[in-house]
Image 1 (cartoon, rainbow, N blue to C red):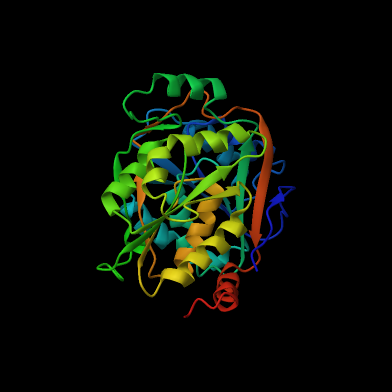
Image 2: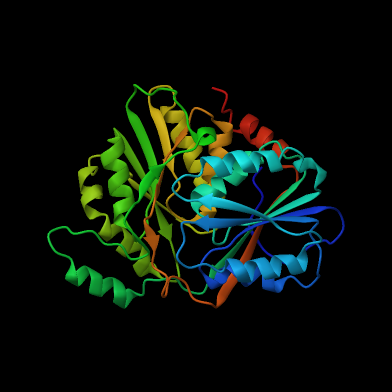
Length: 343
């Protein structure tokens, strides 16, 4: 039922189109936009502008979006620590989403929570939804940077090699649930090079069971091992539990979805299920779909205080991927029936 991830080819210029992008700090912000050959192919565009933000490619993104859009782009401020206002405003713009034959969302530099908000607000969309992601040739940190950081580590001090700390655990009304609040918690979260993210989640939620998703990376196996090593204390603490860590590649969002379905069916009657999309951005798509299909799931997102800009990802792009849902609302309905998520 889920579409396969394919390499982006081109855009069919016929029909009405809406573009949604974000103005992040990475050069990848512009990767897909720079490959669009046709001008003024989009009827409208929404640019999500981060705040608070110290660095941004927003001016460059705005210039490119204007080039490809028939009308002036709509600017929506997205406060990473207080996203509820953004969620509410976005809902108003999506009231007439079906007037567009295609909606393109470039998730490349979006916050994982922002990705979930957008997908959730489009759950009634009946036409083609395209999700775009540009993968860099390499990410930071380098293996040498990781080894140097581990060498300086003292007395269990935290390692933060992709982002710094956690500003707050963020929730939004549409992604929240009060179901089963008094029951033991099952927490599912993604691993990264910022170990404080999972640590703060676990300390705040105190889950009965913990399931972690590692970032599979076949071209840099050391990253998989390093991420698990960084989280060794948490893994040891929950070591009594079988299969604490599962590993999925960047494009294996469909397998992540099936993994979440399996956990949901096992625990939904006895536990409160909390998902935290803190791993790959492509995997946040699976978390979003799962939340739509199972409203009793609760979403918590620990937002980093800031990101490490230098070497975060390189300018060279390995591939640009596209997910195309022919009729997003129908796809969701078919998934619900196929996986028998109604109990």
